[in-house]
Amino acid sequence: MIVAQAVGRVLAALGCDAAFGVVGSGNFHVTNALIEHGVRYVAARHEGGAATMADAYARLSGTVGLLTVHQGPGLTNAITGLAEAAKSRTPMIVLAGEATDPRSNFAVDQEALVRSVGGVAARVRNGHTCVEKTIAAFRTAVHDRTVVLLNLPLDVQQEQVPWDGAVAAFHERLIQDAALGPAQPALGAGPRTLERTAVEALAEMLATAERPVFIAGRGARHARAELEELAGRSGALLATSAVARGLFRGSPWDLDVSGGFATPLAAELIGAADVVVGWGCALNMWTTRHGRLIGPRAKVVQVDVEVAALGRQRTVHLPIRGEVSAVASAVSRAFDDRLGRPPGEQGDPPQPGYRSPDLAERIAGQGRWRAVPYEDDSGGGRIDPRTLTIGLDDLLPAERVIATDSGNFMGYPAMFLEVPDEQGFCFTQAFQSIGLGLATAVGAALARPDRLPVAALGDGGALMGISELETVVRLGLPMVIVVYDDEGYGAEVHHFAGGPLETVTFPPVDFAELARGYGCAAVTVTGPGDLSGVAEWLKGPRERPLLVHAKVTGDRGSWWLEEAFRGH
Image (tube, rainbow, N blue to C red; front, side, top):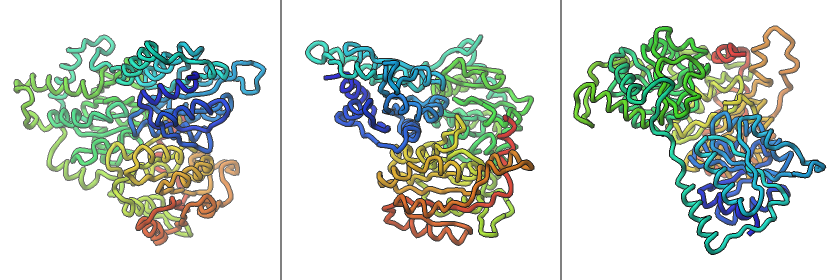
């Protein structure tokens, strides 16, 4: 077989089950090879959308994302989506044709492009090493949790690959070994911290804490059981970063999101904590409200698989390098050893920590944003985005997956739309680009076809990514697309209040009519009564996606926006 065919065959054998892209001459053969070997190919309308779809799919499916693009402009079109994926530590492989002749119009330094946004680059140089190169790219994506560009030079793609006899057996063994995935370090030492000493120190810290709080991030999404077990022993309350939202849903001690999206009660309780443990969480300015959310006397612990992440965003008192579930289990054992309990014995913690019946009652009554009173600003042909989102939350089925774009509106779906678990929220915000929300929803919908996909977009981001409406319709996705329309780039409108705003405000756009042109069903919402159109669509048969054009009030900036702009 030729190189392009071998690369597709290897990636399929390694477990890549879906690929996203836009096909051109440079990636035609490798894309067809993927399809031939059982990989589902999803054609996007723009490479940027394809990259974001692959990112979202990888996040919710637990597989390596796969993107296939043409040389030159195919890759440059995808760069914003790749930057988001790289900053989010999404394992992804990018298959890109490569023009190595400098006289070609398509010739650009593709390696430098991907490295500039945080990815790594590799190149298939000949047919004899293409299998090993492809496997190495897969291993790097998984082990380093990063975006890997695999350049496929146009001339090399046509070279023959030896694949018979002993060579074929060798290749198959390599593929089988790589598909098992390289192991992450289960437990290691943080800077100047011995492994055993660190575990015992955290157990001691939690045993003596009066108000411990756990904040779980992206790296803890798989470790709910271990974290809840340790939290139960120590009396800790549970919170998450935005990207891990929903991880502790159903627990009476779940504070939901820490940071700019935190409820007043969550902010109060996290701010009063005497021990804060970040589990697979960067503890960055968004999660800690620029550090102000964590009290000045609180002891801060950070657990992460990467040494470089420990203490990178803020000073921590105890850094522990290790995989979250392994560290949490080790600390639970150390906690029991300290109490003289037999291994595995359950029981109440020696002191209640932060937990009490009164506090459980407060969390149940005030722990969600919809329980916080507000003055409804609806009127004059516009609906308050809080009223809109609460109404949608009441209507939409509980089994949902929400994808949120960036912008002034984004706090409303992130705080008022409930999610069933950590698989219910796909948040592409590491690069803070607008325009990624609709493509994110496509990738999330394909990863979780058992749930209703909901795309929450601002008007600016909706227009940036609108070409993927055709993709949603073509794939037959029963998606609800909500456009929070304030007729401008709302974040900038409120950031530059008092100055000339002609550059960031725009004439009205009829999003409902645009959506119908793509083949969607659509309703326009200017008040609560208009949500009846959403209720009718939900009754079925949901053969077409539904776009909700919500004309929202825009007289004030969202309350989280003030926090966000402190970093600008």
